[in-house]
Amino acid sequence: MKTFAVRVRTAGQAYAYTELARSSSDAAAAACDRFGPCGVTVIPLTGHDCRPA
Image (cartoon, rainbow, N blue to C red; front, side, top):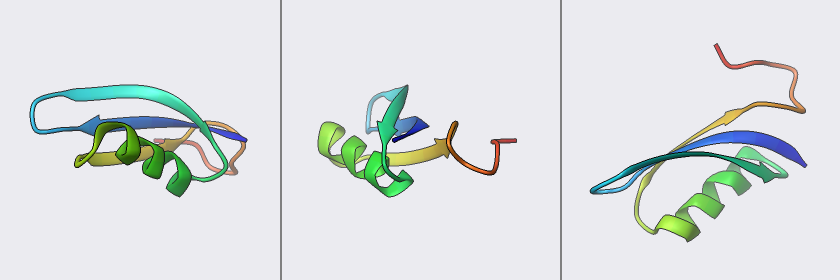
């Protein structure tokens, strides 16, 4: 499992949290399942060869 920073934007709110997932697409899918229609940004934090800028 890897750690991702997830940013979610719904029609009326913005949320930011960390998510443990196998991949960024799994983290994004979990956000959509949780919040419904929304905009999602997923940034890898651990377990990756790159770091966010």
